[in-house]
Length: 85
Image 1 (cartoon, rainbow, N blue to C red):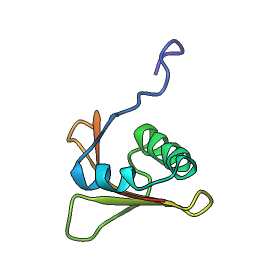
Image 2: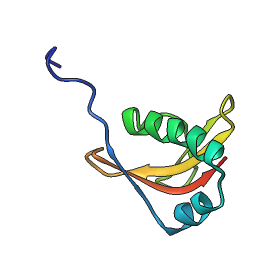
Image 3: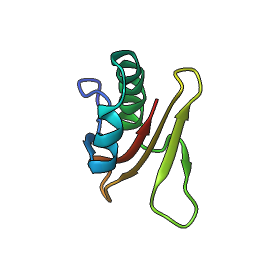
Image 4: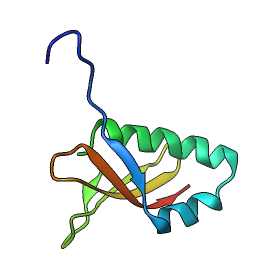
């Protein structure tokens, strides 16, 4: 990667179950969750694979958040299926 280009982040999209959970979070919980979503947008290999699916699960024990997501074939889009804070 050339010096003038930074790390490429994926575009993050939330599906309905994630939006429903997001609506129930406090401002503090949403702020903590934002850090987790940024982390997976920068590195889509974070977390662990959910066996038998294309999903990955990312949990940040420090911030107390969990995100279930999958990444498009080219890695340019991260689709968030579930959030918890």
